[in-house]
Every structure is written in structure tokens, then in C-alpha cells.
Length: 280
Image 1: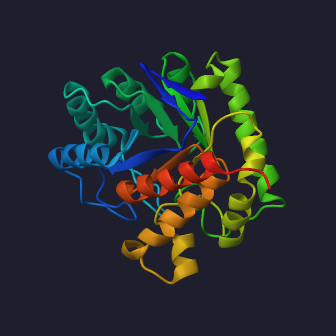
Image 2: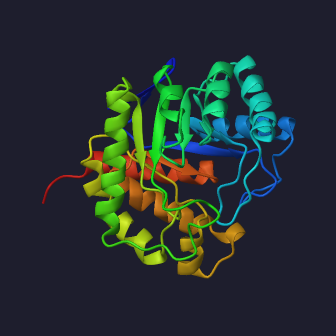
């Protein structure tokens, strides 16, 4: 299976790592560390050296209760980073982490190859922004908004409702002319989900794979891992790697992470074990 995004084709026969580049002052884990363009670009190169197959660049925090930023502020944060990396001819596709259609269009014009949308292309004009390009897209499920999503998330059946949304938006993409090979789905761990919802969704990953598109999972350093371990956000490396390994063992093809090197090494073990596994 391959993920087509712009001029790139990513082989998903083995799990791949998407490295996170937050150009923000308030992201839950690394806010402020890479806010300057030079720092973000240097961090991006470090992640590539560590084995990242994709770089996800975001200019607006989507942590719980995060304040929204203006369109211009988001553009001012992300475009210089994308332009610099494209000018340096980095060998991996760049993903723009945004729900704003204007940011999507500007990022694609600047050289981004993937749109990673926490709102699943629901904003007016978002679907067209991707359809009028050759960019790949990651459709994520979120209940509510970052400001409200963790107040009291409720589901009758979290797996069925997440699956229904992802299938609905996947079909909308197909109807708009976005080829299936350009679509990836994300259950949205931590986005309007309780600890129990997140655990249920992890165990249902094989079921979500039957929707017909590759899955992207972002559990890295999330609060659910802190709830499980009692560790603060800067001490969740081992829990994050464990979550990535479990997801990959369930068949997930893309892992969105902060700790690229450790995750890449762990996934090499997963790949080797799965390749040599034989039925009993």
C-alpha cells in the first residue's frame, strides 16, 4: 500500500513515523521550543536524521482549551518554515497541520504535500483546497472544538460513531475527486475522548482499518498516557513508544510522534517480528 502525496509516494508496507514540528508558543508538549523559524527548521532536519518519513508542521495549538490564533498569525508561523525546508530540498513530504482552508492553500502553494486536518475537512472550502491539488490528506475525528472537546465527551458507541464520521468524510473526498491513495484516516485520540474512549479505540484499530484507508495514530505524550502512568508530559517517552508499538502491531501504518528516534527503532523491531512470525 502506498500513500500518494504531491510528488511523493510513501510505502506503507512497513509503519512510518510522522515527526511533529510545532511552530507555536502553547502546544501541550513542546510549545515555544521551536517558535522561531530557524529553530523549527533545525528541529525538522534533526527529525529527518532520526528517521522521520513525514514532517507535520503546525502553527496553532489544538491542545484542550487552547486559544485560536488568527489566520495571519498562523500563516506567519508556518509558511517561512515550509518555504525554507522546500528550498533546502528535504527528502520527505511536508504536512500542514491546519483546519483553515486558506492556510491549506498557502501551504500547498509553498510546497506542502499533505493536509492534516483535525476537523476532517468540515470547514467550508477545506475539501476544495485539497481536491484542487495533488496533496494527500489526513482526516481526523474530533468531538467539539479544542476549547470544548474535553469538558464532557459523550458517545453511545465511540467506535461506531468515529468510524461513521471517518467513512462519511472519506466518501466526501472520493466524491470530490480525491483519489483513495491520497487519503489517510485518524481516530483522533484525545480529541473529545475520555480515557475509556481512547482505550476502546486502540483496541478497535483493526476494525477501523477495514474502512479502506491507512490509519494515522497520534498518541505521543497524550494525557491518557499520563493518566495511565502518572507521569507529566515531559516524562512520557516510554509510554509513547509503547502506544506506538501497540498501534503498529494492530496494523496502523503512520505514527505521529514527538520522539522520532526511539519510535523508529521500536518500529524496526515490530517490522522484524511481524516479518518472521509464522502461524502456530
